[in-house]
Amino acid sequence: RSSDLAGFLERLTACPRPGEALEYAVPVCAPSAAARNYAYCVKLQPGTTKKGKAARDALEILARRCDDAAARDLVRGVDANEAILALVGGTKITNTEQNKLKKDRQVDEKHARRLKKREGSEK
Image (cartoon, rainbow, N blue to C red; front, top):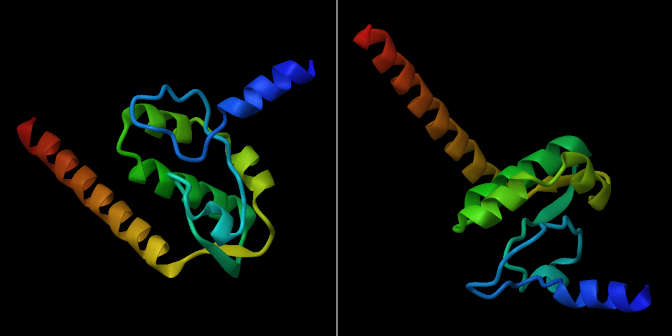
């Protein structure tokens, strides 16, 4: 049993190499110095945002950052409850990342309105 666990732990990495097949995305909360070299990370600060909202926003930011479709699917597949359990209470996402997420959401909404308008005019 311990050899199975050791083999599994050896396969975990914070920085996957190009061409490696990714199997899982694991939510982790760590100090900035420890997570500095992680391929995908979001900086959190002490704040008043509820853990559920912070976790959902963090997962959305990470999914938008992923260049690889397989990695994006793995991040989107992370259960929000798992991410909530990994977070510490009373956090907020840094302002720069939160502002970028707001802009991305506005662009998405604008695009959706344009598509809806086009569909309505074609009928």
